[in-house]
Amino acid sequence: MIEAAERSGTLITARYALEQGREVMAAPGSPLDPRVKGCHRLLKQGAALIENAQDVLETLGGIREFQEPSDLYKGPDNSDFEGDLDKAKTVIQPLLSPTPTPRNDIIRLSGLPVSLASAVLLEMELLGEIFVEADGKVSGV
Image (tube, rainbow, N blue to C red; front, side, top):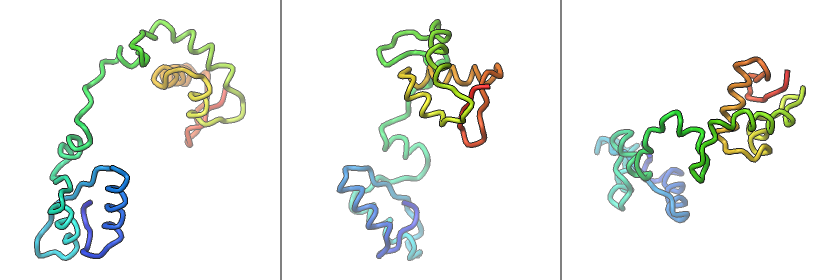
Protein backbone atom coordinates (compact mmCIF):
# COMPACT_ATOMS: atom_id res chain seq x y z
CA MET A 1 0.00 0.00 0.00
CA ILE A 2 1.30 3.42 -0.89
CA GLU A 3 -1.36 5.70 0.55
CA ALA A 4 -3.95 4.99 3.18
CA ALA A 5 -5.52 7.48 5.51
CA GLU A 6 -6.25 6.38 9.07
CA ARG A 7 -9.81 5.54 8.07
CA SER A 8 -9.89 4.28 4.51
CA GLY A 9 -11.15 1.49 2.30
CA THR A 10 -7.55 0.57 1.68
CA LEU A 11 -7.21 -0.58 5.28
CA ILE A 12 -10.36 -2.68 4.92
CA THR A 13 -8.78 -4.33 1.88
CA ALA A 14 -5.60 -4.96 3.86
CA ARG A 15 -7.63 -6.60 6.64
CA TYR A 16 -9.36 -8.89 4.10
CA ALA A 17 -5.98 -9.77 2.60
CA LEU A 18 -4.67 -10.79 6.03
CA GLU A 19 -7.79 -12.88 6.67
CA GLN A 20 -7.09 -14.74 3.41
CA GLY A 21 -3.45 -15.33 4.29
CA ARG A 22 -2.09 -12.85 1.75
CA GLU A 23 0.98 -10.70 2.19
CA VAL A 24 0.39 -7.09 3.20
CA MET A 25 3.04 -4.58 2.24
CA ALA A 26 3.26 -0.86 2.87
CA ALA A 27 5.55 1.98 1.89
CA PRO A 28 6.45 4.59 4.48
CA GLY A 29 5.80 8.26 3.88
CA SER A 30 6.25 11.57 5.60
CA PRO A 31 5.08 11.46 9.22
CA LEU A 32 3.43 14.82 8.58
CA ASP A 33 1.31 13.55 5.67
CA PRO A 34 -2.16 12.39 6.81
CA ARG A 35 -2.54 10.33 3.60
CA VAL A 36 0.01 7.75 4.82
CA LYS A 37 -1.00 7.36 8.47
CA GLY A 38 -2.79 4.11 7.62
CA CYS A 39 0.37 2.73 6.00
CA HIS A 40 2.38 3.62 9.07
CA ARG A 41 -0.16 1.84 11.27
CA LEU A 42 0.11 -1.27 9.06
CA LEU A 43 3.90 -1.15 9.33
CA LYS A 44 3.63 -0.98 13.14
CA GLN A 45 1.32 -4.00 13.02
CA GLY A 46 3.82 -6.04 11.01
CA ALA A 47 3.20 -5.30 7.32
CA ALA A 48 6.25 -5.82 5.13
CA LEU A 49 8.25 -2.62 4.64
CA ILE A 50 8.53 -1.78 0.94
CA GLU A 51 11.08 0.75 -0.24
CA ASN A 52 11.78 -0.60 -3.73
CA ALA A 53 10.88 -3.38 -6.19
CA GLN A 54 13.44 -5.72 -4.66
CA ASP A 55 11.54 -5.57 -1.36
CA VAL A 56 8.34 -6.65 -3.11
CA LEU A 57 10.07 -9.58 -4.81
CA GLU A 58 11.67 -10.73 -1.56
CA THR A 59 8.35 -10.48 0.28
CA LEU A 60 6.62 -12.54 -2.38
CA GLY A 61 9.12 -15.34 -2.13
CA GLY A 62 12.22 -14.32 -3.96
CA ILE A 63 13.24 -13.78 -7.51
CA ARG A 64 12.84 -16.58 -10.01
CA GLU A 65 16.10 -17.50 -11.58
CA PHE A 66 16.59 -16.41 -15.15
CA GLN A 67 15.53 -19.17 -17.51
CA GLU A 68 17.76 -20.04 -20.41
CA PRO A 69 15.80 -20.16 -23.69
CA SER A 70 16.22 -23.93 -23.83
CA ASP A 71 14.42 -24.18 -20.48
CA LEU A 72 11.30 -22.63 -21.99
CA TYR A 73 10.48 -25.89 -23.74
CA LYS A 74 10.69 -28.07 -20.67
CA GLY A 75 7.56 -29.59 -19.22
CA PRO A 76 6.72 -29.86 -15.53
CA ASP A 77 8.53 -33.22 -15.40
CA ASN A 78 11.61 -31.54 -16.95
CA SER A 79 11.16 -33.47 -20.20
CA ASP A 80 12.51 -31.77 -23.28
CA PHE A 81 9.89 -30.57 -25.76
CA GLU A 82 12.20 -28.70 -28.10
CA GLY A 83 12.18 -31.49 -30.67
CA ASP A 84 8.41 -31.76 -30.35
CA LEU A 85 7.44 -28.37 -31.79
CA ASP A 86 6.24 -30.07 -34.95
CA LYS A 87 4.21 -32.58 -32.92
CA ALA A 88 2.74 -29.76 -30.85
CA LYS A 89 1.85 -27.91 -34.05
CA THR A 90 -0.22 -30.90 -35.20
CA VAL A 91 -2.14 -30.71 -31.91
CA ILE A 92 -2.81 -26.98 -32.23
CA GLN A 93 -3.71 -26.78 -35.93
CA PRO A 94 -7.10 -28.53 -35.62
CA LEU A 95 -8.06 -26.10 -32.85
CA LEU A 96 -7.72 -23.12 -35.19
CA SER A 97 -10.54 -21.87 -37.38
CA PRO A 98 -11.38 -18.78 -39.43
CA THR A 99 -13.34 -17.56 -36.40
CA PRO A 100 -11.02 -15.70 -33.99
CA THR A 101 -10.56 -17.67 -30.77
CA PRO A 102 -8.89 -16.45 -27.56
CA ARG A 103 -5.27 -17.62 -27.39
CA ASN A 104 -5.77 -18.94 -23.85
CA ASP A 105 -8.63 -21.16 -25.01
CA ILE A 106 -6.46 -22.70 -27.70
CA ILE A 107 -3.64 -23.31 -25.23
CA ARG A 108 -6.02 -24.84 -22.67
CA LEU A 109 -7.74 -27.08 -25.22
CA SER A 110 -4.41 -28.30 -26.60
CA GLY A 111 -3.41 -29.83 -23.27
CA LEU A 112 0.19 -28.83 -24.00
CA PRO A 113 2.46 -27.02 -21.55
CA VAL A 114 1.78 -23.29 -21.81
CA SER A 115 5.36 -22.52 -22.82
CA LEU A 116 5.26 -25.06 -25.66
CA ALA A 117 1.84 -24.05 -26.98
CA SER A 118 2.82 -20.36 -26.82
CA ALA A 119 6.04 -21.08 -28.70
CA VAL A 120 4.12 -22.93 -31.42
CA LEU A 121 1.56 -20.12 -31.76
CA LEU A 122 4.34 -17.54 -32.00
CA GLU A 123 6.16 -19.57 -34.61
CA MET A 124 2.94 -19.96 -36.61
CA GLU A 125 2.29 -16.23 -36.38
CA LEU A 126 5.80 -15.38 -37.60
CA LEU A 127 5.41 -17.80 -40.51
CA GLY A 128 2.07 -16.21 -41.45
CA GLU A 129 0.14 -19.41 -40.74
CA ILE A 130 -2.18 -17.73 -38.24
CA PHE A 131 -3.47 -14.23 -37.71
CA VAL A 132 -3.40 -12.66 -34.24
CA GLU A 133 -5.82 -9.80 -33.71
CA ALA A 134 -5.12 -6.78 -31.51
CA ASP A 135 -7.19 -8.30 -28.68
CA GLY A 136 -5.09 -11.49 -28.76
CA LYS A 137 -7.61 -13.70 -30.53
CA VAL A 138 -6.12 -16.15 -33.02
CA SER A 139 -7.52 -17.38 -36.31
CA GLY A 140 -6.23 -19.73 -38.97
CA VAL A 141 -5.30 -18.14 -42.27
